[in-house]
Amino acid sequence: MNQAWKKWGIIVFVVMLCILNFKTSAYAAGANVTIAVSQSSLKIGDTISVTVSISSEGAIGSYSLPVSYNSSVLEYTGGSGNGGGGTVMIAGYGDGAQTRLSATLNFKAIGNGTCTIATSGGEAYGWDESVLNISHAGANVTVSAPQAPGEGNPSPDNPPLSGSDDNTLKSLEISPGVLSPAFQSGTTSYTVELPKDTKAIVVSAVANDSKATVSVTHHNDLEPGANKTYIVVTAENGTQRTYVLNVNCGEIEEENKMPSVMLNGMEYTFATTERLEEAAVPEGFEAGEGEYEGTPVTAYVSPNHLLHVVYLLNEDGEGQWFIYNQEQKTFILYVEYRAAANRYIIMVPGTEVNIPSGYAPVETELQGQKITVYAKGDDREFLLIYAMNLNGETGFYLYDTVEETYQRYIEPEAVIQESEPEEPVEPEPSLVTEDEKLQNLRVVLYVLSGVLIVLLGLMITMTIIIKKKLD
Image (cartoon, rainbow, N blue to C red; front, side, top):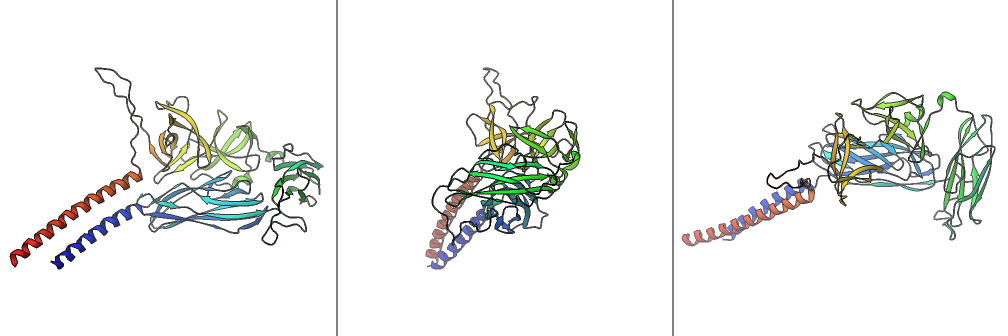
């Protein structure tokens, strides 16, 4: 009798382990992100490289991740990514054997402070197209402004002082030259055009708080070409703010001047050839020729030859890609989404495109960029996004804002009753989330467990009956 109990107990235990192992293998596959920086302490003007790696136990099929950073402290200067202004998108594809993929991004320190470089959201897939759960990571870098002799930043040996934290300027004047744009306390970056032989400028900077101190560096050692002068305001409590003067000594050659364009109230300038060399061109796009206001510009052509993108610099010198329609002279922010088997470019539907019934345009943020999407009523969990795939096919995609996944959207046809005509009822798209899949597996597990218990009871009963007959 005891032997029979032990035997059937072992069988049940093994079966339960197999079921649990199936559930674990189906949902525990994951990918770990690590971030390595070439140095964690910088001075304004220094450059660093940041390596973002994603690894998994099995072969990685593809991944797409947004990398965020503080654009007032660091400026993205290029590398294996696309973006700027606080978010860079990185992506990669495996070859069936790689369990680790990496991307390297380059940054330049432009403002003092602490900056966290981190990943969030995004997608990762195994080579078998299974979804990988991503464990994100982050790294901190600290940037300090160039200091005048005898000055220093707060540290454990030189703790911050108490008092006002006002580290702004009340006024800023230079001689010779004129600031562009005109001085405003909250604007920290200016451009100054001076003759080629200018060796120094006089900077008159007055702090807004009388207890704050002001130091100026790199204003007496100007050279022909581009220079940067730093004005550091240190508040009473030790916090700092840096104002940067981009001093150009010497006129820019006419052929190197690039046209500018106003977008959403902000001035953008077409990037020069030198800046384009630093930019991360969208994958598959090839350099071509374009024109804006009679000036030749470099426009990159998509793999399907249907889109042209240009690289524009904002007033702070940060670059972003825009979809450029040369005939209509329109610019649309380039936002790209990558999935395991395809790649999509977010578009703006033309007047000839019919918006699905019941949906209205709303503004949302995707991968750090504001785009127009379409929502049904107050629902913000599932949104429609108009996009183009690499085959040049455009259409609406249903975007799950919780799981950050896309699904091709086909508008249901209206069903009309012949006897009593009614308004077409548009069913909600059916989606099965990962939580629902997990719940279904749990139900199966409970059912199997119940069946095993019943079988075990029957076997025990039969064993008792057989034993009695043998006795």
